[in-house]
Structure formats: structure tokens, C-alpha cells
Length: 624
Image (cartoon, rainbow, N blue to C red; front, side, top):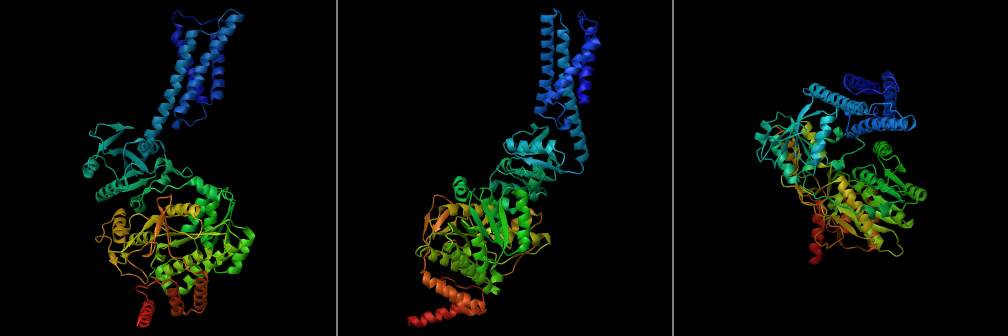
């Protein structure tokens, strides 16, 4: 405010000096000093009205320029009006019109130049001080979004990047400059383009090129020792965080070729808004993401149930911070405890249940099969019985592709859970809609391959792969949960919805790519070690069994698997026997019963293969 007032006073003095020795004479209604005091007082009042002082000068924008223009040109209007009124009453002018015009133009010019000078000086000093400490980076692409990114890097002081130029494919000359930075044509020759800019890193923004193009660029840049950073698309920038935290080293998830998933948010909102929702396993990888996505649809209340107190604690902190308006409660409970579940259902009167609680680690469950029976089967039985009893509107169960033609206890236990809720749906008087969703591996979930590879690479290797030909279907956690919510709006009850997971990924190639992304050469600097298939593991996962028939839905990524539905009485009786045998840890007995319930369950690389030999021998004898 003081600086702006000083500039206005200086402009006034300059105008007086310019006009003093000209034929133009100041009016004598007021003395020149008195005129100066009046003009300066009006100027200060207009500065206050238009808040020309409210901006931070070094971060001046076009909005600040408009404020200055409005304030200064309003001065002219006010001073001219004073002249007009004084002439009409007294017959004389107070101010010389020429002096008003010169004063306003000079004041505006001085204030504008002052702001430009401060801003440019600040930018020069910041660049000078950071040029040796910040990473020298180039941006790939010259569209509107990448230029917006460049402006953010150039004008913000807290970034660890110093922008030195752009790379572009569709440019034939290196004479172009944007924001004063050179635009270097790539035209298929990364090494030649890099040689013209001394950079350490390159930023690639989402949506500026295809996944395949991004993969090629990443491998080419990494091969020359240039680190690659991924930047979210402009529309995805998280407004709660600074952009600096959104710019991260490119990850394997950014290079997997997956089509964008589109869901009907209006339909999901209609399904979830003002509802009381239970999410079991709600502190786990899938469950917690379901909670986050459900929170966006304004539910009445969300109850997050999990048996991990630490995970619940951390999730509670996150939800309070990120979703302050969400009415939620965390409940520490085990779904195999029927009495505890009954109390919770009585207390909250749930409208919808998302059942994500499960044990899923194949080798661990193969060694402790009774735990899969307690949680994956008995827990599902408990929840489904109470849901049906309390007439819960909808019960959505999260299943797995390992339930298809299972080769391990985990997959077989999930298939048994699928069969139970399918059969229960057919019972008379059931109003709850039981819906099953089935998908493959999710990227970054606890216990999954990508976090394991990251730890192994950070430790210097080796990266362990069970088989050179093993493949898996992969999907991100948010994508999987989006489809879970969408499938939940579709089901009439009894369906198994299988998700289109896209193309399967070869795990060996995944390991190679992750090693390169970390700046190392596979099998030279970081070794890939083949350790053999683990107990219960198979080379290829499936989303549908050999006898399944499918039908499409209105969503291109969701299919309905028409698996055979068993008789509820028979399924219930077998599951009862399985649970009873599991409580006494009679492993061979309850696994044998599980194979009877799920005939397609054939153990691989497991101690339970002997049961398959026994069953096969028994069937041969029956045939004879």
C-alpha cells in the first residue's frame, strides 16, 4: 500500500515537472499542493476499494493487473466528475484535464512496471539460487496441459525441478521457444534430442501419449540414464496436495496397457446415497478402497469392520482427514464370530454389505488350511445368514479368479463361499440380493507381486519369479472397486460377475521392466531368480471355468458367469462337515470334503495331491 502510494505521488511530481514549463497552466481554484493532496487522497481511497495492495507482488497475475487498471482509470473518472460538478456549480474547473490524463497513465504504467520488475527479479533470483540444487528437467509434449505444467514449474518456488526445455515429436525445427525454453524435436532419435539439453530427468504427463508410446519413451530415456517422472493429467491433480507431490517417478502401474474404465456414477449414487453400509475387511487393500469410493456417494453411515486393529487405526486417521463429512465408525471384529456379528447387525440395521474380508495368500493358506475354512467359508456363511435374516437389501461378495478350477485351498474356499451364497439365494423367502464379483490380481495390494519386487530391487536383488512362463491378470485397486460398485447396482441376486481384466501380464517381463524403471539392468545389475512354483500355485489363472457359460451386461467390462448352482441343503450340509473337521484340524478330512463340494478343485504342487489320487482311484473302481 505504501509503495503504491509512493508511486502515485512520484507520478504526480513527474506530471507537474512536465507541464510546468508548457503553455498549459494549472487552475488556481486550489493551489498545486492542495490539488496534489486531494488527488493523492482519492487515489489511496480507490486503492483500498479495488484492493490493489492485496496481492503478493512477486506472484502478480492478470487479475492483479485488472485491479490496478480499474483503480487508476477510476481516478480519472472521479477527477473528471469533480471538475464537471464544480463547473456546474462554481463555473470553474479544479484540475487540469491534461494533468489528469497524464497522471492516470503514468501511475498505471509505474505500478505495472513495478510489479513486472519485482516478479521478474524474483524469478531470476529463484532460478539462480536453485539452478545448482534442483533437478534439471524437460517436459515431453507441447500441448495446453504440458504448458500449464511448465507454467506451474516456472512460477512456483517450492518445486525440486528446474525446467530447461521441451521435447516434441511433431516439430521440425529447434528454433521454437515456449516460456523462454527451447523446444527440441525428437523425431525418433532420443539420444540426439537429449544431447541438446543437459537434463537429469524428463516429465511425461498422462494423456499426452498412448500407454505403448509412454512405454517406448520410458525405455528409451532410461537407456540413456535419464530418470522419468509421471505427472497426472491436469484434471486429476489433487487439489488437497501441492502439485510437487503429484509428480512421482514413473511406476510399472503407469505402463500397463489398460483401457479406461467408465462407470455409471449416477446409478451408483442412487444405489448408495443415504444408505447404511457395512464393509468387511474394510481396512484391507480392497475393503479400504471400497470405503473411499463409497464415501463419495454420500451414504448415511459406513461401518468399517476388520480384525486388524493397526490397519483400522490408520484408516480411521485417513478418513477423518480426507472425508471429514463422512459418518463412519470402525468396528474391530472377526467374521467367524457369529455372536459378535449378530450384535453389529442389530445395532446398525445395514442396507448393503460389501464382503471383502478374506485370507488370500496362497502358500500361507496351503500351510494353514483351517484358517481359510474359518474366515473364507464360515465367515461368509455367518454374514450371509444374518443378512438374509435381517433382510439386508444387498450383499456383494468379493471373490477371486483363483476360485475358478482351483488348485489351492484358498481358491477352493472362495469357490465354496460362492456356491453357498448362490444356493442360499434360491431358498424360499430370501429377499436379500446376493451378488458375487470375481476378478484377478490387483496391483499394489498387500502381499501382491509388485510391492515384493520393489522391496527386492531396493535391497539389491535378487528378484524372485516362480516360473519364467507364469502369467497373471492385473488390475488397479481403484479400477477393481469401481467395477464392484457398478456390479452391485446390476445384480438381481445369485449372479457371479466376472470382470474383463484385459490382457494377462507375463510376470518375468514385469520384473524386467520394474528393474529398468529403477535404473538397473536386469540380470546384470539386478538378478532375476527362478525359484519354482509355490504350493497351490498354477501358471495360468482363469476367470471362468471350463463349463461356465457367460452372458454380457450393459457394461463392457462386466460379464455374468453362469456357474452351476448347487442344492442349498446339500451345500449347507457339506460345509457344516467341512467346518466341523477344520475345528479339530483334521486337514486331510476337511480338504477331502472340500474337494467333494468343489469337484473341479485339483491340488497342484501341494501335499493334498494325494487326495486327488485317492479320489481318482475310487472313481476308477466305481467305473469297473
